[in-house]
Image 1 (cartoon, rainbow, N blue to C red):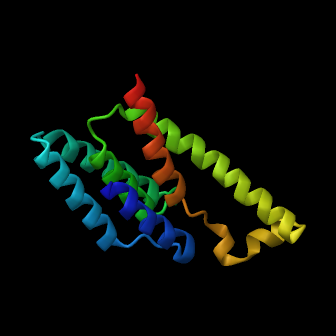
Image 2 (image 1 turned 180 degrees about the vertical axis):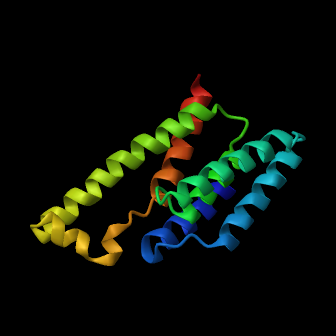
Amino acid sequence: MGYCLLGLFIVQSDISRRKIPNKLLLLLLATGAMSHLLASSSILWPMTLCICTFFIGYFLFKFNILGAGDGKFIAVSMFYFAYYPIAPQILSIALIGGVYAIGIYVTRWIKHKNFREALKESKLKTIPYGVPIYLGSILGVVIGGLS
């Protein structure tokens, strides 16, 4: 429940300001830690997964493939849902992200009638990837829970 609510605030911020606030990510990390501890499960595996995912996100950020906030959001999502299968989460994020990106670029192309002009606007150069991370994580948990 905490992930769904806080995730919506993160998505809203990513869409409107193209920023994912660290305070929301820390709050999401804290609620995930509390849920793991209340469920009497170890946080060693979630923390290990989170740290590994964070470093992968950091390198993707350094190579200008992913935004810094997006990498941190994926890492916190992996922490939150660490005891579910990881592959469905990653695949769901990637597939939803691909469809989402294509949809945004096609919409921009139609709106501007010229794809190059659509890309000239600075805000249009980025895609708020928080949306696919949020939806893909939830869908991945549902799919992983079915197997």
